[in-house]
Image (spheres, rainbow, N blue to C red):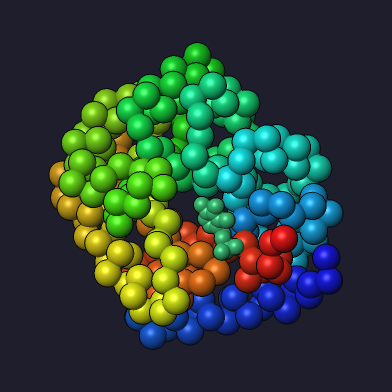
Length: 229
Ligand SMILES: *Cc1c(COP(=O)(O)O)cnc(C)c1O
């Protein structure tokens, strides 16, 4: 890959600092999840050496393959997780961004209980109700969180969304704003075991807008590693 990783990372860090300053936020509260799908382990290691500490994969198989080859970072699962694959990742990831069904919540809970551990999760919300995307509908989030909060093996840490593809990043602002409002509404319920600290939103195309709207985790692939083939 003919990509200058540290240049790209510095560019992203600069954008984050500026977007945070513009919106009166502390840039230190915004984490970069470096999205490594299709990126060879060698380049992932380079990104970790350059200072990135959170890696995100959207496929279980790719995560499992790279996991033993990369040290010094934590892994997040950011893509749709099938129930029968939960068992492969419970000991590898520190956060699952893509909790999108009650059945998945129950399976993660079951696996974590048997290990005597707890998994941090974000509830994926399909704000735009895109039929091609996974996620809980906005008007079902409150009920979903209330039910999932009963499970001892998972801890809800916030919400995640994937914005629709738009040519003008400004068009995406209402989507991110709605996710933040939803998170505020959940927070007001003050449910035991629910800690709404994270808003995972924003990718290479739209992370600046996402930060202006309150993102605490931005999931960035191509702006760091170059365009995927
Ligand atoms: C691929 C992917 C990203 C990163 O996409 P880029 O446009 O390359 O930044 C973020 N989130 C999810 C869920 C993804 O699958």
